[in-house]
Length: 92
Image (cartoon, rainbow, N blue to C red):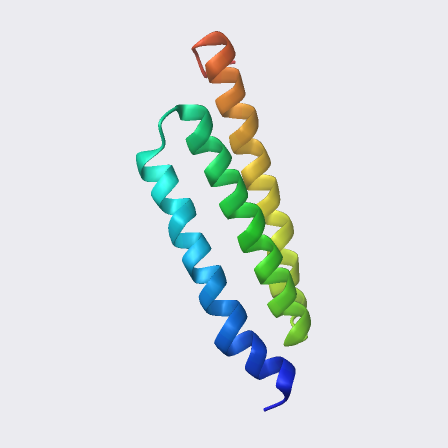
């Protein structure tokens, strides 16, 4: 293994895993709905960055393309929650 692979395996991935656990804790116990939505956004965007980086490292175009779908899903969640908080309904 190269030094970069060792660094990613033993330093970066554990730190990222702890941050994901903290994001999910805020999603579960967040004080307001806005805090929860922000935590979900940060979680989705950081997961998509991780997927993109891993996809580039292993040279997988499918994994890199999945990041686009994940980011669009997070954006749609923002739109729906903002609409719900503004109007109180999700119809039309």
